[in-house]
Amino acid sequence: MFHGDRWVNAFINVLGENADAGLACLKALTPPVKTIPGELFGRSAAAKLEKLLRESVSAVPAAEIGKEMEYAIRFICMLVEKNFFRRIDSVLQKIENTLDEKKGILDITAETASPIDSGFEENLRRMIKERTGAAGIKMETRLVPELLGGYRLHIGGLCIDASLKGQLEKMTADLMASAKMSVVSAPGS
Image 1 (tube, one colour):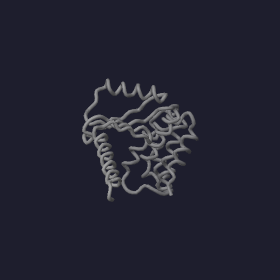
Image 2 (cartoon, rainbow, N blue to C red):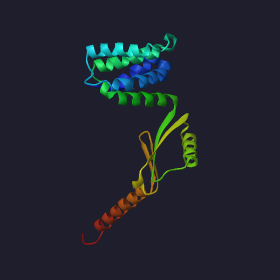
Image 3 (cartoon, one colour):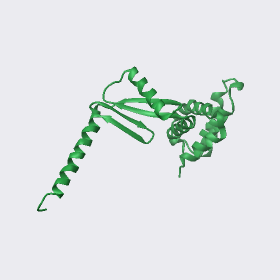
Image 4 (tube, one colour):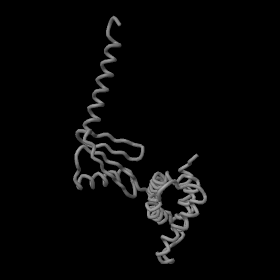
């Protein structure tokens, strides 16, 4: 069974304050590993991969290969050995999210019905940063024409829906609830 949080915590705890550099190493090593054809799992595959990865970084001066690169190589090989490398994208995302959380950086997704200008986006960032006390904001914007107008913000597990579609759905639900209440309270029921 794969316990992604354990892998993430192990990676971050071993590297400590160098975890950001370790994440950069993981992100640099992952794409070439993904291009290797066939199934990649087991102890022998991990040993071959380790040799291949070490050869690929041997062109980099030894002074620039720190413990972060060493640990990234070992981490990837361990994932391959345990047949969990297919989960590397979710592990990378979780490591990045955990490091951002530790630094007080909020990860926000803004869904909008139409493209937003940079001024609005900057004001939104500033407002959220002021109200939450976050150290920084990472914002991704997505166009979602189904919203009809306005925007929807996803901040962690919180969703703030300021879209026209959301308002229409709320009004519909309110009207339906009101209609049910009037049927229940009608005389002769």
